Length: 376
Ligand code: FE2
Image (tube, rainbow, N blue to C red; front, top):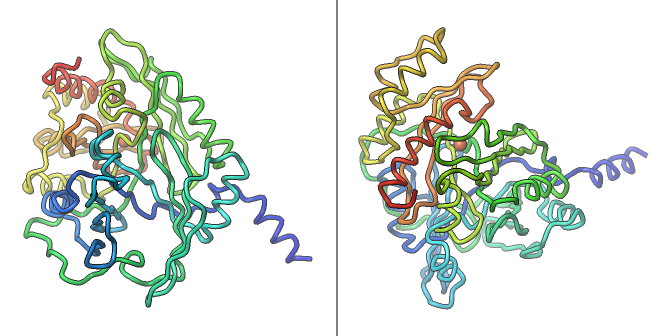
């Protein structure tokens, strides 16, 4: 009896309920060795595994980078007919897979496809002396995919085909202290936001956490709308759509250069943003510039918070609050050549928002950069 009930409740579970959290993000890039070196020296990641010809992979190389719970894989093509080369030619460097850890890749894949997801790759199992790893992939916005990763029976470095031998050591530098992915943001085309929110809600079983309309997120020149969906736990995914403004919005610029919808930014949490941003700046990471006038406004927006304003202003850190607390956040310059992908560093002190109060100040800062590229 109880077995039947258990089976019934498992069958009724949505994909969202079966997600344990982020497993990794896989970036497809033009030069994986250089990207791994950049993430290691500038952002303080450790290089923890490698795959390529030396490990039996013929058409690509991949480096696995780790900091706290954050795991990135950067992959580059070795041959012109490798799918990674096509992806890079079209999009530049970008996030190919938002990979999510699950208990059973087969179950989550089957549930997602039964509810309308487009399969990209049926569940596949790989084995080596460290155990077995099962993965399966479905499509999401643009050419981005979600890969479900079942690694409970695997205790190797990352996946079969990866080695920990002869890895570069992390160059010296101050400790950065990023601890986990807070949210992953996607940009979609004009008019497509509702459809993609519908996909996450109806197909994957996500809930809507917040919505911002173009009245809330606008400047004199451009605007966007944003809806945040989440699985009720760790997987939080805001989705942006451009809105009409006097000039080209930053979302349109992204879509022009990326060529289709895709991942815009990855926010990474730190418990001490002043220490983290100081370390990143010392390592050469550059951030969006914030005008001094921003801090005059900020002090009146959050008059009761006792914050180290001089440090925040010196480091260009933004402040926002909601009914539950406050947050500190900062945005890097673009991390690749094209004006598409960047990182956010965030410290949450209770607040569950995404810095809506900062949008105007942020976009004014972004538009100054866009104007310098002649794209506003
Ligand atoms: Fe963000």
